[in-house]
Image 1 (cartoon, rainbow, N blue to C red):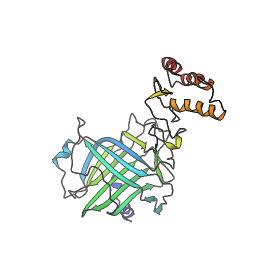
Image 2 (image 1 turned 90 degrees about the vertical axis):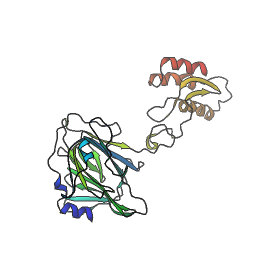
Image 3 (image 1 turned 120 degrees about the horizontal axis):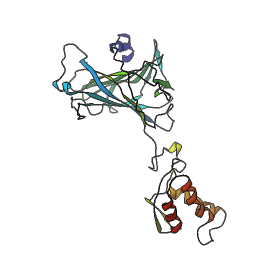
Amino acid sequence: MLAANLFNQGTFVMLKPLSVAVAALSLSTSVFAQAPSEIPSITLTTEGPVTSMRPHVASQELSPAHDRVARIKVEIELRTDRELTPWQVDNYSQYDASVLSYKATFFDDAGDIVELGYPEVFQANIDDQVYADEQVFEDDYTGAWMNSEYVQNDQYYSSRLIINSPNEILHFVDGNLRIKEVLPEQPSYYASALLNGESNQFIWYYFSTDFLVYGAQLVDADGDGIADADDQCPATLEGDTVWFDGVNSGVTNHVDANGCAISDHYASCEAEAQSGGLMGYSGPSYCETQMGYQLYRAGLIDYTELRMLRNAL
């Protein structure tokens, strides 16, 4: 395989020691040690200042636009299919068909985007010839290589990200790259990106990463921001505010951490009344009168909203 050959030829060691101690590591709350099987893919985002860059072939030259580049941001969409089977090459494990897309964005010192002629997103079409679409990991869990190479309309495209983490910031679960839940106080790691677009020039970009995070692409059928796998109310009742029998309470239909909106909680009272044969009773049920207090104690509503709900019942 191409990746194996590149490793054996020493491509990986082209990363010169650019380890930079990072004072702050930004991680979102969506970081997890193991991707649920319900999530088809995750996006790894890494960003940091560019420390150096050079053409992959010595005879090529960098464009004048490169002088403006100060930062790089790389986003890679990775499959989380646990059935991906690796094959071993020396001390590396390779997982084919695991890189779905690759995006690299360059910025100058002012934070403005620098256009370098690369595609907005490196992503092969279903009928394109794909040479590589893989993750390759070092067995000692200190490095990861994510690679995509394909031909589209007779043009060869290549994108590659290599992350080296000497302090073992990364680890691998079921063959998938993960950020450890417990990190060193002063982590240090560096990365490099190799890109090739229509210019047919391979350029290495070395950068010290001060931003490394996973964002989950959640399956969220009811659109309430809670993944279906964790949603206790997968069919959240719609409505910006809470209504009772045609009466608008004016209270925002807040959604709790379990994916249940206020309207869902009151609907559970109605379901309870139906199961108990109490639907002939006029006025709010005991469950409904107490529900507002439960929501208030849970911090989902404030006291003013509590009174608005009670008045609308």
